[in-house]
Every structure is written in structure tokens, then in C-alpha cells.
Length: 153
Image (cartoon, rainbow, N blue to C red; front, side, top):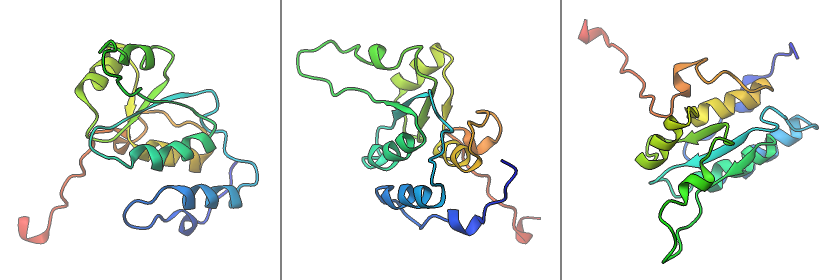
């Protein structure tokens, strides 16, 4: 669109909330919601962050993504239910650093990219789906390097 956006509009508060405020902010600024992820199936993956789904699911829906989640395992059911949800129809796995090994292995077997929430936010802001390798912070396991201080030199 070749438009510059005021970066102050996209500052997020420290900590996590339910994502509703961010979703409302996006819809107020952009009367037509971003269709950056239209037609993209996204699998949400985390093992330790209980609010991950509630935070990112509505944002993905606003960006017109189809969200897939691991079903709850019912007692007595087949343990391999993951294969029915995380299959070749999934376009990308949105994960944090605590993605369960089984989900990461399955995604790699299917050559499905595993990305961080930075990829999602940047894609929404830019208005189109960014390349998964565009920035190193898009990796789900990215750890920022410690900046060198004057004392270290």
C-alpha cells in the first residue's frame, strides 16, 4: 500500500492480555480488516503458556486465518490424534519456545514452518504474509543475543 503507519499506534503494553484490546485497535484503524493471512491454516502450539491460545486466536481470526488446534485427548481415545490436526493442510505453526517435541517433529516432517508471534504481528502490520525466513526473530526458538557492554570489550 506504500503507506507509512505511525509506529506509536502499534506499541503493546508490557505483559500479556487477552488480545481483545489489540484486535479492537486494529479494527478501528483499518475499517477493512487485514486479510494478510486469508486462506492460511495456522496451528497454535505451546505447552506451558496457558494464555497463548486466548491471546493469539482472535488476532488470527481477525487476519482471516483458519486456526487449527490440538484436540483435547479423551480418555480411551487414540494417542495419535495430532496427525489429524497437524497435517499437510496446515500452512504454518505459530508457536512459542515451549512447543511440545511431538508437534515440532511433526511440523518438520511435513516441512511446515514453525514461527513466532513476531511473524504474525509483522505480517498484520505490513498487510501481507511475510516470508517465514525474512527476519531471525520470526523463529519460534529465537533468543536475542546479549548486547555487548563497554565492560565486555
